[in-house]
Length: 571
Image (tube, rainbow, N blue to C red; front, side, top):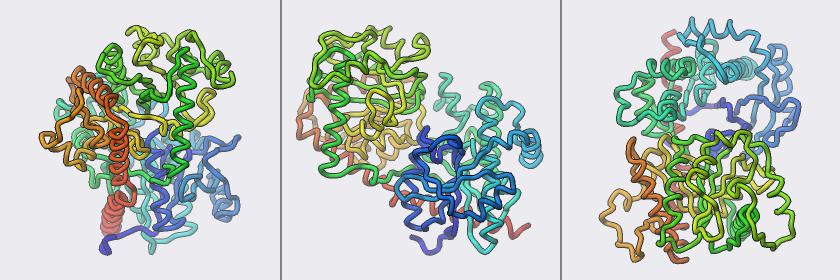
């Protein structure tokens, strides 16, 4: 560690995803926590929304003795808190706050926000109010803690993640100016909206005006809080160079520090445990597929998957399915393929007919498929579901003779989905290959998680992780220097563990063909070559551990603390 860096005595981090597993930010925080806990035990405090007041949160264990005096004092300040430990490696301290009482003050809070920072909350709708009240409550929590425990002799950092926590950062800036503030945008509201609405983002990024696009796409308030927070904190950060360019063009603010997302390898089982859990995962995936489709897929089946948030174009779900359809009748394919689509949709519970089959003592074979033999759970509105409709439109039947079978898993894999009953990471272990052909992906945790679990993956140059992987892999930067493949279909996954496909605004068909060819090429690899690919994937993941990436955070802390010191000196 650089001795010249200013480092905090205390860090407070606020996020909608603290003890609330809904997206990639949860992975950022939960995997990084141990690294910071080891460096500064119990001086890193996470603040999250309390959705579990009437029921048990499996990710949180309350400790009523911890900071009991302060909790009682906070209650007198209209702060209803639960304090305890996050059940992740490092077990950091967490404060969960009930933000609902602050809705009564919403108009007053928004008025002050406009007066102080010109944040436009007039066009708020949907989750804006809920997120803002939580963010305000989080700011109040830190203010109360500061006055109870700390003083200006301590170096303190408050880091807010995404627009949902911007209001709290601005509250801290006004009411506790001694605290240095950091704001991290993991994806800009405007960038995600432009891409999600089918508009070309990258070729025209220089020409877009963020404020104008916010009006056009009806996200004025989210854009406003994001933009004003970026301009008014002591350190503005994002997660990749891809998003840094986006911030400059759409928020009119160059990030001060880029914070790439790392991973904590403690999440990955080792040795015999890894082998056994991989075997269990493959067995369960094949059991479900065979029960659903009436097939006899065995362990020679190549199991591939895409996963993540259900963003049809942004996550590349469309081009992934297109590639699979193009692979259906390709004679070059050397192994049967079972392709999963693991994206949470508006599902209505597990299929009872599939559950009944899975209760049959194993091993058992089913000679006929179930109706709609490509989906594991009921959907509320299957007629408007994009995955379902594309599979039907393309005539995907999953009959026994098809070399490629597709299975849609439209639920959160939390260990209690009613079909697999395994957690996401436990199923990830059983895969042979993953495909994340993102169009909009500021970082890309799913490919990083994949390689950490020794599963080779395909991603794109529009993902921050893909660009980082290309920087690390000399072979990817010098394709002419690669060995000439001995197999009929080129495949470089056995050398690199990750293949990064060039993606732009307009090369959808080329990307689909590349994915098809990579899948076919992977099917032609020998067992030895597959093992080389798995080792290469794991080796790349080793370079993305938090013990290497945490230095970027130290740089951000230093930047924020120095700016805060200068700012306070001028008051």
